[in-house]
Length: 517
Image (cartoon, rainbow, N blue to C red; front, side):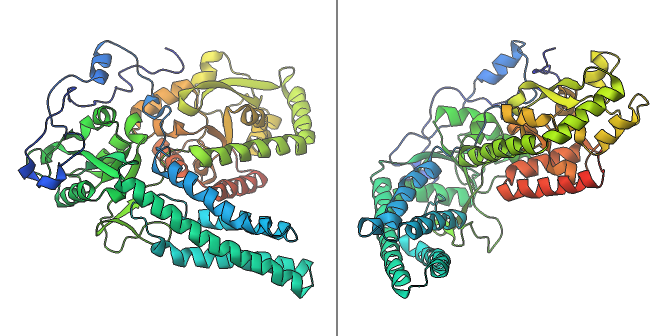
């Protein structure tokens, strides 16, 4: 068996449902004339064998982590376009005072950088379905005032002249006014191109109940939301009984996303368990779509401090389920910086560990072992040797050597303090690993755990890590694999740079307490 592939028995190919390559237009009277007026015809449920089932019947192997290979939330649609349109306008407005005077160029640049950062943190660059400058004004005013106050205080400390600070603040006031004007223009342009249907994204609604019906009606009648309703899926229990005719069931969603070139999925009121829905949304094509949801609890609010909605139906943007786009660029840059600095700063420690390993067990101070990384790609992890395995099979299949008598006192100390893992900093620089991520595991156990635990393979959406949230939460050694997978997936779906910093700080604490294996 290849190290990158598992047998079809251990990781069966997902069933994509039976939807043939044709379209059926239902009767208009089912949900109202305006729901189906214009645009592509609605896809109706018909029969046929999908390509995934045919492939599995042909005896093709499936990869344990294949459902997550190259999957990413589709930032290429509304988020990317909103970011590319709004940020340049804001930057141009914030730097406009430089055209009048270069006397305050340092403060102007600092104010521009800080303002864009505060806007981004406050959700002012996130995509929205309901676009209105009046909704954004309170948040924009507050953040403009906060960034201007910070830069003005620093300028006052550096320049005691009241005239200098006054001149700088006049430039800040001008840039703030231009930001409001620029935002107003960009929002007006966004609504115009949406109403003219120059920019819109095909959307499938998940849920055929009353909420799904109302969403379909609103999207067809009001193009300013930028979404074109092209189909609806739900659980088989809703077939023929829901308020909205179905294009297919949840099993057909993957095929429909490709067939209809869908870019957005909207979760309304599906008649299924949350675990079933999540399993479907994590499949490759579904996970590439932007994901929006109608909150089920009263009082639910969207991120960014002000609510988003379609008509009078509240709607929230679901964050990326995998690290991609700017978030991935930030994480990778921080990994390279951390690994480079750590290799230089810890070079004396690395040298001492190498000498101690040589004294403890003779030549061959490094231990190379195959592990599975991002998207199921195998790589060779580098560690300081703490013992010599009998053969390669023992190295690949022995779960723990914590109490192995062949581990000498030096090797045991290095394992307890995690010093044996310092050479993995080179793996991080190479891109095989990250500073923080799921524990790197051997192919034998990846295949085994992927077959036994449904959410285990999802860990491979990101690179494995030198340390991780599961490890610093006490899940090391002989601890439940299901708990580890749950912590790893939580880390992936809630990643932030500060979360990485917290995990690293807790790891340093564990090292000083000698809390390793």
